[in-house]
Amino acid sequence: VNMKVRLVSELRVDYYHTKLEVWEPVIEPWFFQFVLSRSPAPAKLSKYQIYASKKCEINITAAMIETTLNTIEALSNLDNSKSVELPPLLHPYIIRNETGLTLSYWLSSEEEYVLCELQPGEERSLQDVSSGEIQRKRHNDEVVLPPSVSLIVSGEYTPVKSIPIEKVG
Image (cartoon, rainbow, N blue to C red; front, side, top):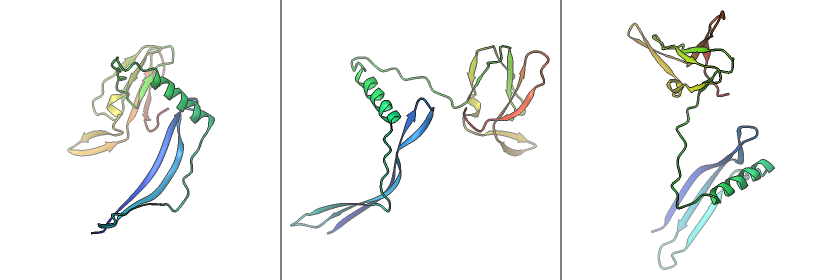
């Protein structure tokens, strides 16, 4: 019995450029097919082929090489006899108070909100918006609203309401 296996896939490799704080491609998105063919006994010949409609583009930059070397060095410095402590769970959204005054905030999309206070220099994760949506019930209808935050700085400042939380940064 002849056997033929076909795998269609996309290959993409990115690295994190620490100085620019962005992900950059090492291998641009590349679509390809891998075909394995095998003939029956007695020959049992196997044939492997890769097909692609465009060339595979590999980006080698000084920043990518520096990141790779730093990663290799960090991994080689690990002591295998010690257990590695994982970092705490990261949340995609944080609020940081750099005003020099006490700051209060609340998630604007909630019917009933909790007022949270941040002291100067303090930061806190916005765990409730990490799903990207906040749901609110109004008269038995469910409404999905984009996440937003409202805030007020202590003193005689006007509250800033419903700042959309759409991008990290």
